[in-house]
Length: 303
View 1 (cartoon, one colour):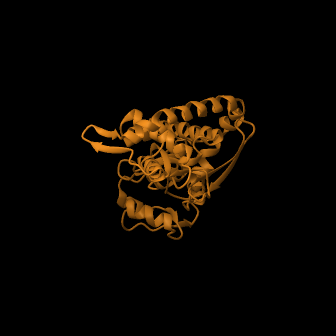
View 2 (cartoon, rainbow, N blue to C red):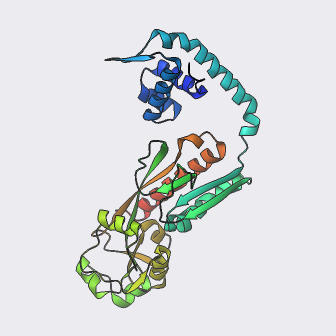
View 3 (cartoon, rainbow, N blue to C red):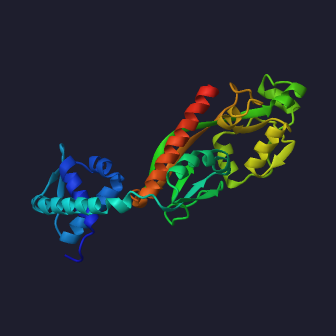
């Protein structure tokens, strides 16, 4: 044996023995399937023996795996006893959690979702990075992120929230003065609120959801919050989240049947911190809060 294997490898071994496959063990442990596979590979390298062979019925344990099973069970029981002893300390939610989200989500949506979380856990500190730049959870630059893209890094775990729709909106006062557009071509006769320059985020969005041809912005801002503020002030027609507009009875949807951008939304974090209570509690609060936000949006502004 070259060096002593990580204790987590024996926990993974036990899960694969009990469930008969890497995927089932991954679900049980809350890990990704590649991570479970790496644990088994590392344990095999450390002990110098093959632990499983593939068969039509799944993974079959070798004699080496069967011999290790009672020791792995002993380690699991000892670990559980240790955690029970430490549970009094572990139940307290304290410390700092850094959350990364887009500017609009971070400023307009998350604060009200965090109110009950921080009221329930007064020793919890939240750092919010509101930026359209995607921060790296593997460095880590942030602990938990709200992203508008499927997480692709294997070490990340995520929960799919659903689609947050964007569409054209305008203040009631502007529409009373200039009229409600009836088709996309009518937008060329209106004041439009939009971006000043194409950032990497905007270029990505335009590639996925191109704007109708021939649109020219009369009011421009390179800050999405500045655009929302302009729409609320009645400067013109612009794009904002349907859920945000639904909070203000004076913000009305424009051409909702003809133009809609669905932002597929995820809450993600590194699998290595998921057992720390402050991260788990915060992660769950964001998932629950954003899920309700999506449901409320769909209920108030169908389609």
